[in-house]
Image 1 (cartoon, rainbow, N blue to C red):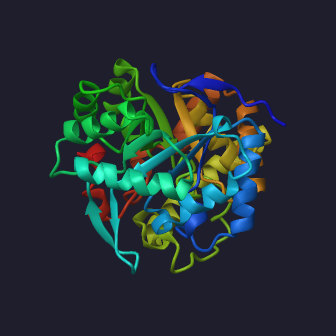
Image 2 (image 1 turned 135 degrees about the vertical axis):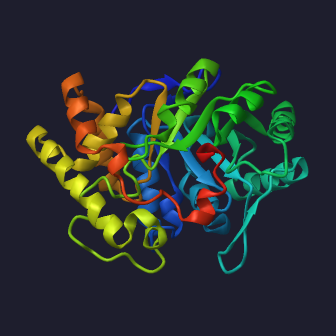
Length: 334
């Protein structure tokens, strides 16, 4: 068993492993996943010392929560922390219908998540996106009421900007902001990250490998399956992908000289950005999780960090991180 270091999530949050497990990919977002291997990956993460598992009630329209329930059936509740996003509206064909952050919706979504996960409380509950029709104060206030009733332990947010963070924190302590952050998605550094630090809010960083771009998995030219989210993402299409893979090739040279993988180097870079940043690793196989955990042993010097950043300049990245309709829903991008 690997002994992963623990850190406090924000100034008011729980102790979490230095890496967390993001379970979204286990429910078909990047093509079909093996459920047995997914459950084994959850077990491997817990056995390595990680304790934070992140999901969303709309991942696979509830499939992800039920998968986690089955995988954790033989584990003690105090041995893991559940971070759950809510509010995403889906159709039976998988289509998106926006986000609902009304107080009555908060209570409704929570009731279903508790049932699917088979637990009495959720450790960190967060709206997946800001509902433009509902003041953030109302959404956070509704979650705070669920804390008072014992159904939730902490409040988190996802993909919101600095001003929304301030407004939310004025209502109730916010333990973390879940947001995309990687070598090629550094938009939070200008305003959002400094604001989070000022407010004592931790960062749970997702897509630290930019959905597999910052790894060896796409460098061989393997085409993406039609049901893979990335097949419809600007960064993975046509000339954009070609341009981005050139940057990854430069990163691969640095990784090879260090004797590590591209993915390990990318994770180590995020870890080096601060103890208040906890990367969420979207592994759905045990070997990928083990590869990621090994990044904890990589300590980068200031010179190495500068070399890595210079090899992947933010202004050279081709394509947005989401398609235009999804980008429009991101308070963090306004």
